[in-house]
Length: 129
Image (cartoon, rainbow, N blue to C red; front, top):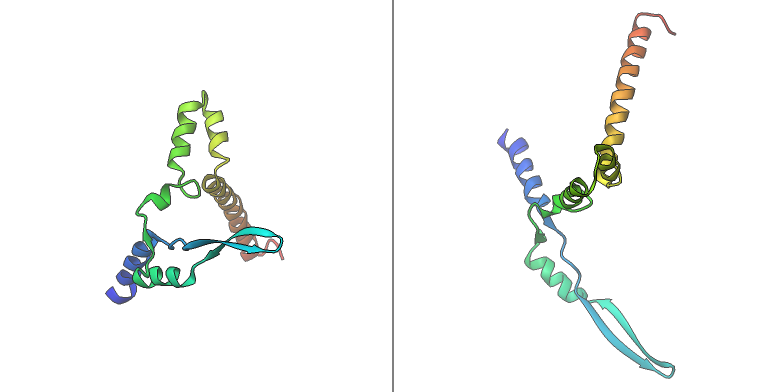
């Protein structure tokens, strides 16, 4: 039980507070007959050395959940302090990706589930073929 329940949960929590390392970028200047150009490339050796040294990635802690793509704590706080009414607050919150998807999920769930339960009951009772 410990092997199949606890270890995967610990692994998921541990991996969720890390993010991938940023690539090591190198800017070089290539000069030719038509002038010089700056090019940015990824230093594959340095990047793979960083990834080999820390295979989990960079530790970011709970900050990964508080950014705009997830819970958006700073944006919610700013919306709460800057709006005058609850409708304006919820309209501002509705523009954040997490809360927009949560609203869709809850609306879908509370709309579809009762309809399917009633439809299944009607089919089971033979009222609809």
